[in-house]
Length: 181
Ligand SMILES: [Zn+2]
Ligand SMILES: [Zn+2]
Image (cartoon, rainbow, N blue to C red; front, side, top):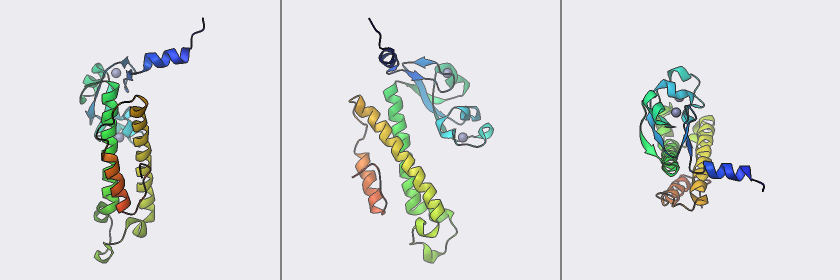
């Protein structure tokens, strides 16, 4: 009898979470936030941080209980589906913030004349616009990846109506989205 090892391993790993810090496996892990700079070594949002020794940003992590103690993670035990739901929320928050920035917040950071307040970021500062728009499109890809995870398992996508609302907002501002129409 031949054993399909890939299939067997996938079945064993389905629903299993890995601790981001020590790689321990389990059906449940602590999902939560920490500002501990030591967690910058493994936190997803810190992959692009240049100085990992001194990052006190609020980091979303998934860790085993001993590591949750060590890195002082403010979180709770969750299954894989819980973790995917949290990532979906985080992704949605990032997309909303990015859209708010493109529509108006950039004007408070840039040095512009009042007469230019009705103009758009892409006219005033095309480089910053490209950077922000690139980040938004990476977040949209992340959204689609998480969405597929729920679909593949025939699980309900939490608050599914969020997506069409977001797409309407994007279109109303004259931009495009990978998430619609
Ligand atoms: Zn661990
Ligand atoms: Zn960082």
